Every structure is written in C-alpha cells, then in structure tokens.
Length: 565
Ligand code: PEP
Ligand code: MG
Image (tube, rainbow, N blue to C red):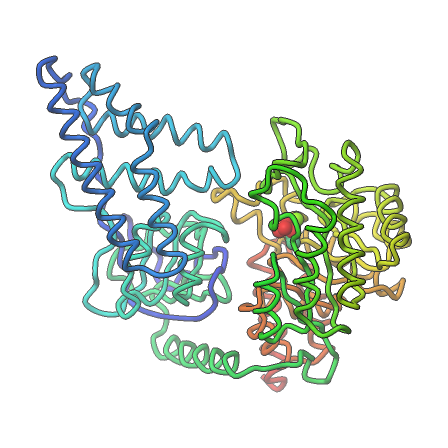
C-alpha cells in the first residue's frame, strides 16, 4: 500500500449515519489457491476429496455456530452463507474437478468462479450473493491449506474497520466495542455490509474510492452522514465532531414528532410497510400513516392468484392499523424484475428490469389488476377508510389515465409512482390524470443513471443525490405545486435526513420510509426553516456530483446555523 496524502478526504456512499474517529484496521489477507501446484496423483484423489469435504464441513459448522449466537439479520445472513457451503451443486463442481486431478484449493477457486459468474448473470439478489460466495471460498481454501481463518482482527483499541467489501461472516462477528465504524471500497446501500452496519448502528460509508491506499494504523474519521472518510484529521476538531454527532443522535432518540420545519411547515412522515404486522409496528412509531404498502411482498410465496376475498382480508389488516383518517397509500402489484411473483404470468426475459413489470403486467393480465382493486375497495369498505391507490412503473399519460379510471370507478383515490424518467419529464400531463404522485427514488435513480440498483459496483451511480436525479425530482415536485396536488417520496431517499431537507425545499409534501429511519428525518427537519430548505435545494440543484451536492447542502445548513460566520 502506498502512503496516502495526509488529511485527504475520500468520498463514498453514506449508509449508516454517525461520526467516529480511530486508527484504521484491515481484515487478514485472503488465501490464494496455488495454481502452480502439480496435478494430484490418481491414487491420492480420493484422499484429496476427503480433505476438501472435511474443510467444507468445518467451515459450515463454524458459520452455523456463529449464526446461532448472532441475532437478527446477522444470524440470517450467516445461516444463508452456511447454506451456500452445503450447496450440492457447488460441492459437486469441486469434487468432480478434484476427481480429474485438480488440487482441492484450486478446485474450490475454479468452482466458485463458475458459480459467481452464474450468480452475476442471474443478477439482482443473486448477484449480491457473490461476496458471500467468495467469502466462503476463502474460508474453505484457508482450511484446506491449514492457514489461519481469513477475516477481521480483534483490535486492541477502538478502531475503524476498512475493507474491500465485507461478507456476513466477517461483519456478524464484529465486536462493537472495538470496531466503531466501517468503510468499504465496494458495496452498495443494500449490500450485507450496509445491512449489518445498520443493524449494529455502526457509522458506515461504502463505495469509497481510494480506500485501499490507507495503511493500517492511520487515523481516519468516518462520517456516515456525509459519506466521507477523512485521513489523518485534526484530532481536536475530529473529537468535537464525534461529540456533536453523539448529541445529534440523542436528539433523534428523543424525537417524537409531529414533523415540521423549525418555522412550522408541516411534512407528512409516513411508513413503508409490507404486511399488517409491519403496519401495526409502524402505528406504534412516529409514522403518521403509510406512504407505501408494497402489496406484492404479501404474495411472494404464492403459486396462484389470491382471491378478492383473501386480498381484502390482507389489505384490511393494513388499513386498520392506523386511525380512519390517516393517510394510507396502497401500491398495486409491483411484480417482476427484483420481485418475481409466480402467479403474475411474467414472461422469461433477458432484461427484466426493462421488461414487463409493475403496471405493465395488467396489459396481458388485466384481471390481476381489477381483482386487486376490488380487494382494496372491499378492504376500504370493511375498515371504513379511504386509502389512496397508486400504480408502479407508469411511463405514459395513457397508462395513468387507464389506471385512474379503474381506481375512480371503485370510489378510490388514484395516483402513480414516479419511477421512470419519462414520468418526471411529463409530470404536468401525467399529474393531470391522477390526484397524487409518489416518487420511487430507488427505481427512478436506477433508470436515470442506467445502473442496476442491486449492483455493488455501481453504487456511486445509484445514489439519489446524483444531480440528474435531483433535477427530475425538482421537476416532479414543481408540477405538484403548480397543480396543487400532493407529491411524496417513498424511495430510500426519504430516509436520508440531509436529503429530506432538500426534498422539502423542492416542495415534497410527504416522506415515506422504514419507521426506524423516520426520527432522524423528523429531528433534522425540526432544526431548519423552510427558507433554508429551499436554499439547500437550490444549492444542490446547481452541483455536478453527489459529493458536491451533499457538501453544498451542508454549507447552506452551517451558514444558516451561524449566519455571522
Ligand atoms: C422505489 O423504486 O423507489 C420504490 C419505492 O419502489 P420499490 O423499492 O419497491 O421498487
Ligand atoms: Mg420501485
């Protein structure tokens, strides 16, 4: 590793807020298969297979043991990696190579590569498992070679863990007393690193370019809110920022709503839910209602279309969770792409995220949509509520018109999601057909940037702070303001407190996210007035990169806090 320029600041994608400073530590190096080793003699191949089997068993056992003592998501991802270790196809790919004379470590490396390629081709969630697969490979190779288990050291003092990317088996064993923040060179907001860092509350930045140049022992500050890693910061200043971040966290912990800017401009804070259990938990949180009920997630395991009655029962559970007058937005089935539904008659397509998904399914299967709307109507009648109903993946005026007609026929309020650049570009015309918009920034970003939202490699592109995304959000929001219709945001962007300031400044009326993310958003908005939100939005809109946009907004907020400075 070359020595980095001191006091440099590297930029990445912020995934868990908070600030920490400490010496950098890197995980132990990964073992390398010895590709120059001679072929295994025929008479020794059986023993070589046994050596591999024993190594695979040991690794599986260790992963299972760790999953039993871990909690929540960490336990699930460890169990899933242990599951990969026992995958028959993978084991067969290894043993058949050994059977032909390939040494066990090389056979593991080759078979893993074959499976990794396969996972990448499938894309989406499977592609995200490639890190797990490679982690498994390294553990088995180390075991076969009799080397130390690769992974994270246990530092003597509170340290910042740096890595290319972390596998669940690494992160699940983290001692949060000793590892106080994380930064990785790869990984996206949905990678395992991010999921587990979130669960452990460790400030975390992913996709940090140039991280590999930081030597172990270098003092680094991780700003999980701003998305930066600062090398050899001024320590007095760093400690002050750590203290301030801790105080900000305390303010978040004690925030109870309702959500408004410091000068009283109300902002609706809503929850994203997937079933009645989540809706009931959301009702216990600071959420005032539901901004996105992802109905397709209720049916992922179902082989056949649920009846209207079955659907009505499920939707009623969600509608009943909040008081009758609370806002609840039900999204019709967003099947396809990353959310396959067995009964949706999805065609086999090479590029499903650009294929038949969301509302487009209704073209070939109109009854699916009509039955679902009947189910929502019945649920609304049963619960005495008036839900808003929106369609995902609407790209034309005609689609919006057709959907709105069917929704209105049932006495419900129609809206559409803004997830396709075309929808934002034609915001005025499409909004004329419906009563509200909800911007799905996850897909909108994916389609604006032509970057798969599940891709770890493209995380810096799939960032809703990309100025091109902000421009489309701005355009959509002003169409709402001009028409006097509500425009909300229900993608992950709504969970980012700093971005929430920009969104409110752009005219966004409601923010919908996982309930756990809402107090930080509400607490932040309570510290700024509407004029500052507008100034922040204006500043963000004239930048040319996410890092510049974040910095511009932070500057506006800092100036607003101390105008004399
Ligand atoms: C989005 O795309 O931002 C969104 C909220 O929908 P989903 O994440 O379910 O695709
Ligand atoms: Mg979407």
